[in-house]
Image (tube, rainbow, N blue to C red; front, top):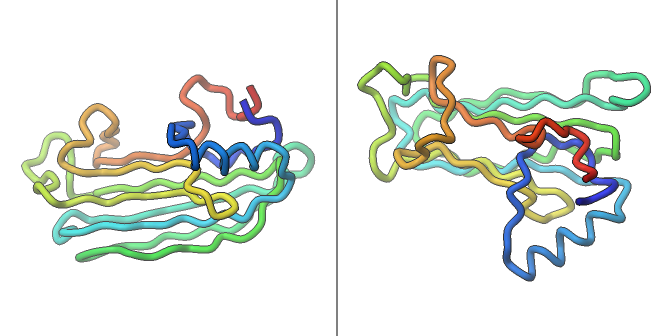
Length: 161
């Protein structure tokens, strides 16, 4: 797919829109990537909404910790976190969770409640995930509702196929 895109930790759900495809095509020749995480959410009261991210620099040669963070959202969210510049062999993994929404509990997101995470690479939405009442099979219960944006679902974390 893209030869030099860093392993920024997102399932590849590339948007089919032509304009987005053009922007994503520009990434394939890049060697440096400005990465941001945008979190949006509404009606989050009582759901235990959180976002975590971790990053690793130089995964190929000498791995070392990069930026990481943890944020909670009581009612709503509308924030973009600028993580900085990353290279081809750097990783970023982000996870959104609803800690009060468990698989065996009666607490589930109400209609109109959602927590959405976008990863932006060089200003382009590279991938997105949403936790809501319609998330369905995408949700992992561990034991709470969670979705991670990480390596590709086929196990190829290099993102270079």
